[in-house]
Structure formats: structure tokens, C-alpha cells
Amino acid sequence: AAHAEVYEQAAKIMGSEDLKAFDLGQESPKTRALYGTTEFGKSCLLARRLVEHGVRFVELNLGGWDTHTDNHEQLKLLNRTLDESIAGLLEDLQQRGLLDETMVVIGTEFGRTPDMNMNGGRDHQPQAFTCLLAGGGIRGGQVYGATDERSANVTENAVTIPDFNATIAHGLGLPLDKIVYSPSGRPFQVADKGRPVTALFA
Image (cartoon, rainbow, N blue to C red; front, side, top):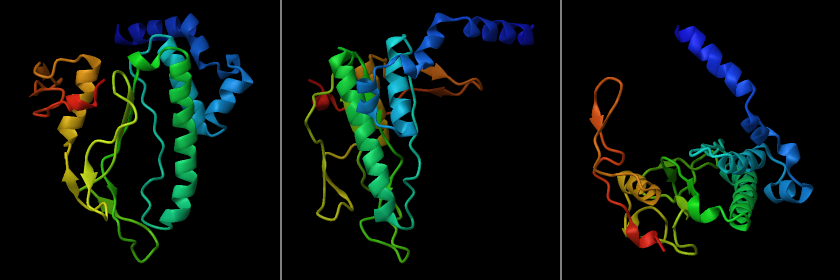
């Protein structure tokens, strides 16, 4: 019965009108150029198309940031790819009137050390790092928090990972205090004990 159900769902998807969301060829050359020619840029364009088709959550990945060697040269390519693609995504969402109701989140689990190692790389730095929120009610053009002059430690307005998650949940209208249960019956909340940084919202 489970096999038949999966088969039925797959067949339904194959005949769905929503598959058109994956056809990037429907976009104008001007719009495609906005995102750049990288695979990540194409992923960002696809993300916008999925949002337009009613998909409520889209996750993209841009790997390669674990720069333990040759940090500076790796970041030249990574930063160019990220900056071009995300700038295109935000501009496109804004032009289409979708940015106010779409939150774009760029996050990581840790930053990089301010000091270089012997391989010209930078190692793991969990004490201080940057994330980005845009759209979805976030007031643009602001920086929240600060680090010391070496970017080694937070000196002002520290935001924990649970706080960051709570801020996203708050923007999406998710109940922070609701208890949900994992398949094994373990209770948890969407942001544990985190509190939203409401100062970020317009």
C-alpha cells in the first residue's frame, strides 16, 4: 500500500502544471543575467520561481567556505558568486512585489578566525560570525551587533543561534512557545529558549 501511494504521488507530480517552475528557459535573458551564470545563481532564480508557485520553504547551499587553506583566493570566487546571486534574488523579489512576504536567510554554523594559519587559511571561529536576514518584514540597511576590532569576539548585542531561529520564526508568524514532537516522541520548540530580536523588524 505504501509503495502504491508513493507511485501515485510520483505520477501526480509528473503531470503537474507546477513542473513549469523548473523551466528557467521561460525567463528573459535580462532576468537570467541578473542572477549570473553560476550554478548557485541558477539555484537562486529557481528559488524565486518556486516561491511564485507557492512553495513555502526553499533551501539552497553554497559550499566551499571551509577555507583552512588558501583562504583569500577561495573567497574571491565565493564572495563574487554569493554577492551577485543574492543581489539578483533580492532585486528580482523586490521588483515583483514578493520581498515583503519572503524572508531570505543566509546563515552558517560558525565564522573564520581573524588569524591566518600556516597554510594561508582561516580556521573555525564560533565566538563571532555574521548572518543575514532580508525581506519578510526585516528593516533593510541595518547592522545589529558588533565585534572587537579583530572580529574575534562579540562586544555588543550578541545573538545566540536560538535567538536567530526565534527571529526567523517570529517573522514567519510561527508560535515560539508551541510544543511539537519528533517521530520518537521527543518534545521541542522551534527555537528552544531563544527570543526574537524584534528591533530588526520595520
